[in-house]
Amino acid sequence: MRVSTTRSLREAAAESYPRPVAPAPAARAPRVRKPGPAPAWRTLPPAEMAAHLLAVPTITDTSWTDAPRLRGESRAAFIVRMLTPPKDAA
Image 1: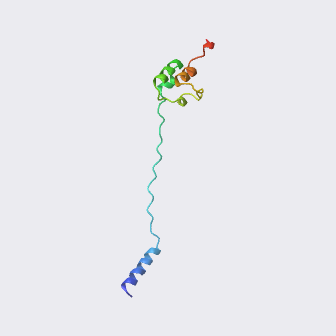
Image 2: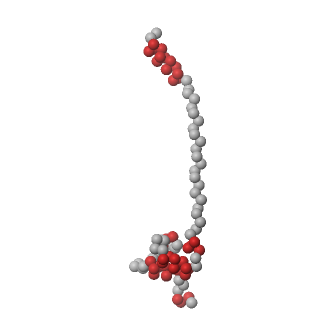
Image 3: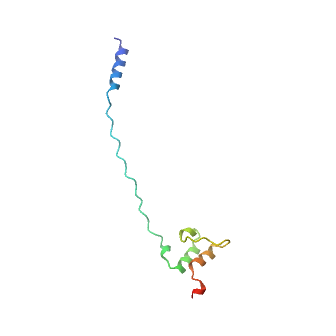
């Protein structure tokens, strides 16, 4: 037998045996995010919340109410309408 034939027979024999499979690395548990505390402005009374929302223009309407603005209504008018009691209620 030639060396190349012997080598190929050995390789074929080695490939026919099952190779041990390394165990898969342990999967990391998914990171659970803890919810942060609620912003302090959410607990303010309506008059103070209106003042805060008027002072901070980056807070969106949808973060504090589900009501839509009226057509052409400014943000300031919307905040006042939603957070101040109607004059008839007094």
